[in-house]
Length: 193
Image (cartoon, rainbow, N blue to C red; front, side, top):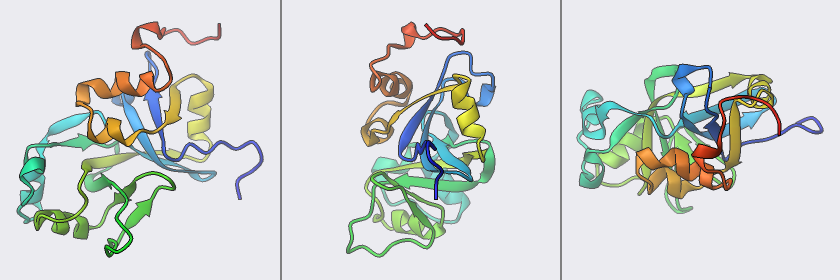
């Protein structure tokens, strides 16, 4: 059970504030897949790396039979387990069998880490919309709450359209716009008005 007053940011975007001390997260938007009293897990959705999906599939001995996805980039999901793939995708319709290892985000997306989702995609099936990362962002118990209290992040209810339908270079400003914030309004100085 979560304690009274605990915040749950599952299915929200974390938006790095200007001046984020950790270079790895500067300018990033993170989709939070899980947030409990034990910690948090999320995927950075706006940091493409130099690998295309078709190349990632070749590395795991699969051919990607989804031409619309072949040239999509793989993303840096975060600094933890960077050799592992994480597939963020729409919830599967209820009559489709699930995958071996999927975390269903309540009222949000699914995050699958098992190879069977890649096999489905390689056969031209699988989820319609996907974002694939190597690695994830993780926080220990209380760590994310501490970063939030020090103005490291803004948070807002996630919008899947920003993940799947927005050009990568616009995702940060579009996520901020969900809060009614213009990136130019943000100061690098912490503090309160």
